[in-house]
Image (cartoon, rainbow, N blue to C red; front, top):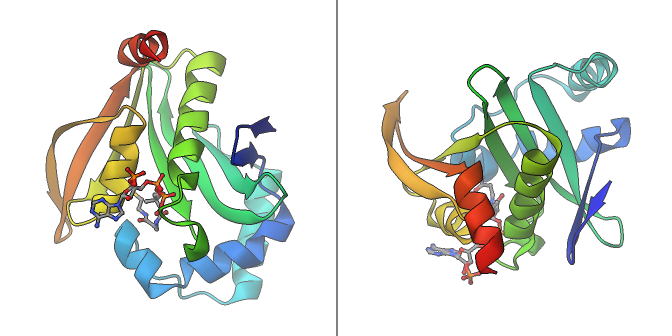
Length: 175
Ligand SMILES: CC(C)(COP(=O)(O)OP(=O)(O)OC[C@H]1O[C@@H](n2cnc3c(N)ncnc32)[C@H](O)[C@@H]1OP(=O)(O)O)[C@@H](O)C(=O)NCCC(=O)NCCS
């Protein structure tokens, strides 16, 4: 478990499945994240969920985001881990709307980035977010990510952002 001033990141547990299913079947969250709405039933979802917890993917490291008093408010992950290229993609979702725009997302991202650069040899973290998702872009900018281009895919327009280990180290000495 990794704690900061507002949030802690911890390993995923089976009891998270209901929250995650609720968020994955929420139309607004799906639209903000440009992901398809989940259509499987909860029992099917739970079975897949248990199997992924038991046999985790080597290229993907998910965490639950909790408040300091233990409320599960979202998830973050680094995935598409490529040790040869030294990079991985980052994803975050604060599913509980009561916690938007209060600094929880940026603290979760900062904590995850710090974990990645301290605990792995990865040199670059990248992500994509919809051009229209200004909140997400602002959140990532606050965490030190910079835009390096745009991508059109499946009818969506994304802003591409990245953070290199060297930039991150420089930012640490500035603060
Ligand atoms: C995107 C997300 C992770 C950000 O987390 P958060 O806790 O809400 O973000 P933070 O409070 O740390 O930062 C958001 C910033 O955006 C600002 N903001 C909010 N709406 C904005 C808008 N329409 N335009 C510009 N800035 C905006 C906030 O004021 C805040 O900036 P500030 O701290 O300078 O005031 C979270 O809101 C979320 O998961 N949303 C739903 C799913 C989603 O968008 N997923 C896509 C992720 S790529």
